[in-house]
Length: 239
Image (cartoon, rainbow, N blue to C red; front, side, top):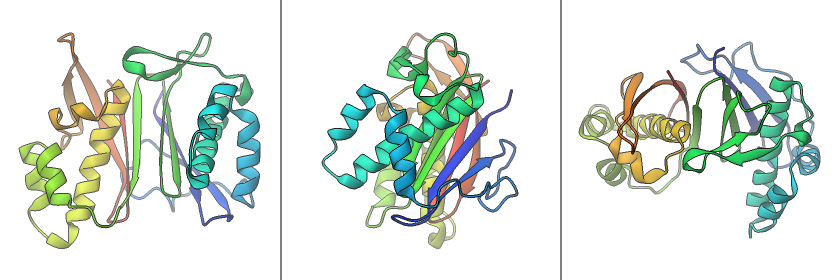
């Protein structure tokens, strides 16, 4: 089975919530593709209300710990959206799904649904969920103003990635930076590694070798699903 990515986009606060299934073979902008579905909800408030009934007690308690109402709402909608996506893939009631933390603390479904792997990412108005029959990671990032991208690249990117980001057309530095960043995060999230490993992997190739702490070499394939100066989306799956 291939990788499936579902993207939820909030048009504006209190506005429509749109969902799009992104084809795994797409390497260009998927958001205007034929796979975009009609908006399932006329208002994000309705989606949040439904999501609140889908998440479990632990998720609800974590949501309550957010100080910002916006962060709390995004957490509820992203985890509710994750459950809706997984429930649809498995033909199971979303609220019945149970999770545990596997190796490196990565969440996984418990028996009998553990074969379906998943990953969740959210940024700004966007929520992305990736599913596959193998370890999978997804990352979506909206551009942040005021960041010193050159400094960050020199700290976290390997030499060839720095050259890719910082050379050439200076007007496209931001686009190239986020393209590399989401590919790195997608791989790390597929494994379950934290950001402390981000400077140790190179992701310009579409297939990368990763050395695990036990010395085992594993391989991941990476696809950039969207990349421009404002938004980047990538998915990685274990070979």
